[in-house]
Amino acid sequence: MYRRSIVSKVTQKKPLSKLSPLRAKSSPTTENTNEQTAKFEQFSSAQKAYLDRVVRVDQAGELGADYIYRGQIYVLSHKHPHLRPILDHMWKQEVHHRSTFNNLQLKHRTRPSLITPLWKLGATAMGVVPAMLSPEAAMACTEAVETVIGNHYNEQLRCLANQFNMEKTDGTKDEPEEIKKLTDTIKEFRDQELEHLDTAIKNDSHMAVPYKLLTEGIKSICKVAIWTAERV
Ligand SMILES: [Fe+2]
Ligand SMILES: [Fe+2]
Image (cartoon, rainbow, N blue to C red; front, side, top):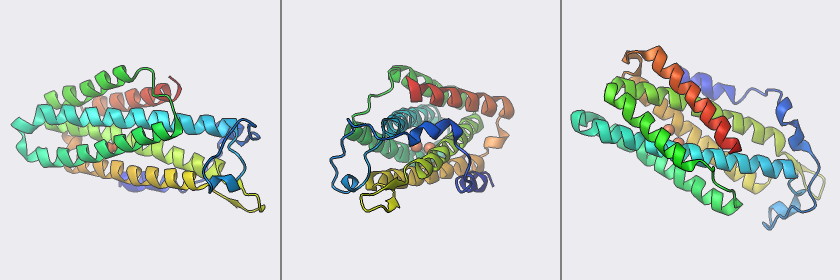
């Protein structure tokens, strides 16, 4: 139910007033070396800045997810061995997400978040502390994190679809190949995050005590972390 409601949100076209500057004219300094993107208008400086922001925040977020699951595995795998394969499966997917965004960071020459050590520390605590309370609390943490990340990826997909439908030299409009690839990557990862959300619910996240306090607190922390990682 959670997953369906999050997936359906991406199909709704919301007005993106705060992102309207992304439609600004091309910067004369922008270079597109890819043969496919050479057929398009150059990215505007606002579009380039937005792509930088996407890569920076998603790399920081996936790094955080990697550390959250490591923390959960460290605490839970001995006392609750039946959870080990479940956690391992999710962790391996997060490692793949992280390495994909590491590569995109190099490709786009995007600077990493300046407070990466803080993300590592915070994410480790977010994995370890709820897991020390109970396995259900760890799953409630996963539910909260993946809910926020699912929504975050959907917001990015809406923005990419709205802001990168660009004019080609022949007058037609389409998305540049690198935007299509990035969109496919985010969709794939969004779907996997929502599988993690389903897994958490199936493993009794709602039985955590105190469920509301844990999930709402963690959601708020994640939203602040996303806002910060986009900018710092
Ligand atoms: Fe992820
Ligand atoms: Fe995830």
